[in-house]
Length: 365
Image 1 (cartoon, one colour):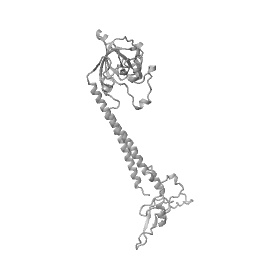
Image 2: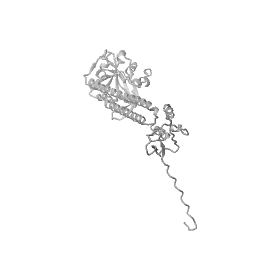
Image 3: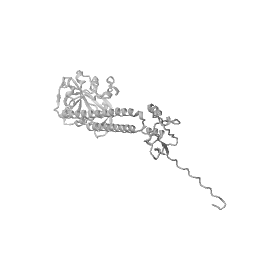
Image 4: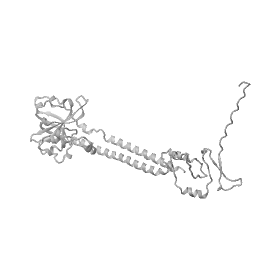
């Protein structure tokens, strides 16, 4: 600084606030004087401590504890009893501490009840998946056993599975008859595989097969591409044919599918789902009851004219194989994984609930 200028003296530093001291009138008096309780300086400056009389203690002890949100106590006066043996903290700071756990003291039982209810619901989903796992395991084993059974020859009505379809589903069936191409039905559109393994849009083709005695059984010939669904692109001459396939009831809808799915319209020859009962309406079968109970999904088709000529005609349909009946999008292992996920989620929620409940129980108000 220049000699002609005088330096400005620095402003004096503000002293730190001292710890507030109270004299406990109920404390035993020692020779050295009254017992002092130090109130920690972390307390907010706006807090005032008043010695409570016995009447104040009785009134405040019988009052209802309130745990408001911080914005609800802004500009208000909060009165709280403080034990002299405990560090004194700000009531507003206590409110903020309570709210950081997402609940207040009078809500801890609601928290526990909600946690138990949600945990029970999630665990029930886990047990449901375990039941589904057992059901899927039994279903796969049943299919594997029946697919290995000897073929069931069918020459006419009455069919072996009449009124006892559940004992014959997924059995290999062999029939001989003539396709009635005039009553061919298409189910779809739906995706399916081609001969080269690629996926394309198309239809399932179901054609009534007239047996030697005039009875009818429906045959699912497989998936055909949309470009060949029209019979004009694949003219077929009626001839004797031998079919080997799996007996099925069709696509049996679940509870949701029964009411929420699109409906088949046999009166317009429009079908979205493979359901034997509804397909039989357009089959023209004289044995309608038997025809509506099940259909045959072809796995091998042999035309007798081709056999005699020693040739095999081109088959435009993509047919299923035995192994396809043992494959599921969600097999038993998938259901087990789902169950473990539900159990893990339920355990996590219950653990968080107990942790927060214990935290609230430990608060001192």
